[in-house]
Amino acid sequence: MGILKECINKKVTSSIPIWFMRQAGRYLPEFRKIRSENSNFIELCLNPTLSKEITIQPLRRFQIDAAIIFSDILLVPYSLGQDVVFEKGLGPKLGKLDFDKISNISDDEILEKLKPIYDLIKLVSNDKIMKNKDLIGFIGATWTLLVYMLNRQSPKKINNGIYTNPKIDQIIEKIIHCQKLHIKNQVLNGASIIQIFDSWAGLASEDQLEKYIYRTTKELVEYTKNLGVEVICFPRGIKSYKKYCDIVKPSAINIDYEVDPFKIAKDIKIPVQGGMDPKCLLLDKDEMLKNAKKYLDVFKDHNYIFNLGHGMIPETNPENVKILVNFVKDFR
Ligand code: 1CP
Image (cartoon, rainbow, N blue to C red):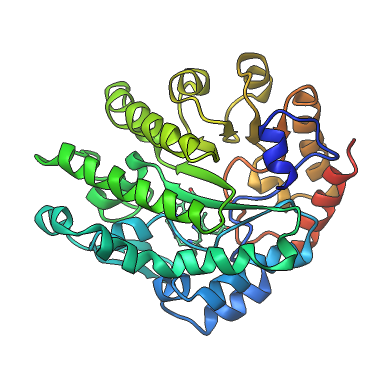
């Protein structure tokens, strides 16, 4: 067990746990090299040898406390038989959502498609670099997957807005079923923590929050906790983190960079992760560390995991990451 898990279990840790969302990726030259030789992103995710290498690359460089598996939230729609391609510079493009096809897909077919991810988790968790570290498995939240599956591309690019479909309730049940299978198999193969990414939670109306976010995420959180594993939720852009935590009851909550950390520290009693704007890593060293110190100070009496308020951006200089990690590690 690593100190992330200890922190989530409200223990006093030897130092402040730290890892980064999107730590395994585009800002690292060693990743870019592998990526340039592998143009098909899905195939890269489903190559356990290469995805293991990418997963541990940041651990070789920085004193971080966890690895997050190199994979993608859109492998769940892919496993349900919806086409997913990643076009350079354009982001993901999904095929037509064929409900009858999705509803007829068996568990064996889903698991057959996702098996390389479980092989990757096994490979990473057996590597000696993982001693005293946590291995984070993840899924996209039901709402965020629904947004991609119905919108068929990032809502950042074009947002068709109406996430309605006459069969929406059945689609949701099938997604939840697949998410549970994926969570269970990540845990069985060695994931010690699960993070649920709800990247588009901020797009949901009040009504959609009730119908598509609270209920579905609460069900997945309960399911994961019953497997004996902690679950961190990241409902990016949600209006009330407090209400979300009260209803969904995650083991820890990742906050985005737009919320006021003082208010979070006052209102929320469960362990908190993240918050700092990823753009701070593009500032000069002193400015970056001033921002980091703000979060460390605000959460000094809290169980706090240092991380960002969204994923690391591609222009990040790895040297700055190193400076930041060392600063956080020396903080107490
Ligand atoms: O082109 C490339 O080189 C691929 C870029 C890339 C990478 C490195 C994508 C495409 N996905 C990933 C890996 C990834 N995705 C990880 C593992 C690496 C790590 O975190 O260290 C994780 C956890 C994700 C999760 C993910 N994928 C999210 C949730 C987190 C977030 O950033 O909000 C989302 C929304 C996706 C969808 C996705 N995958 C990739 C793209 C370009 C997108 C679309 C983003 C958008 O709609 O804006």
